Image 1: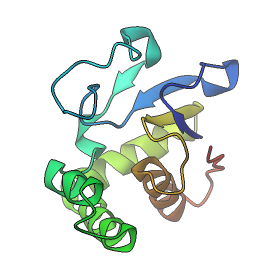
Image 2 (image 1 turned 90 degrees about the vertical axis):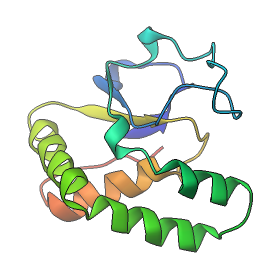
Image 3 (image 1 turned 45 degrees about the vertical axis):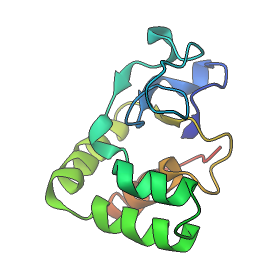
Length: 129
C-alpha cells in the first residue's frame, strides 16, 4: 500500500518504507519535526525523485505529465529497477507501505512506484491511499 508519512500508523501498514529523499520542510534543509524515526521502518532514498525534477515541478516549470514521464524513466534505470525487484520479492512475503509527504497519491511518486511494482510483479495487490 501507499500512504502519506504524516498519516497515523496502522496495523495494516506492516513495514513502513519512506521513499522520500529527505525528511525536511519545503526549504529542503530544516528537519520536519512531524517525521520522527518512529514514522517509518526503512528509508529508501534511492527511490526518491531527483531533486532537480522535484523543484522544477514545485516551481511549476514542468507539468505533472512531464514529471511523471521523467520519474518513470528514472525508475527504469538499472539501480532503481533492481531495487524495485527486491521490494517486489519482499512484498510477496511481507506487507509493506510506501510513504511520502504528499497528502494524496494522485500526484505523488509513491503511487508511481507502486504502479511500477504492480507492472513488474503481477502477483502483487496494491492499495493506494
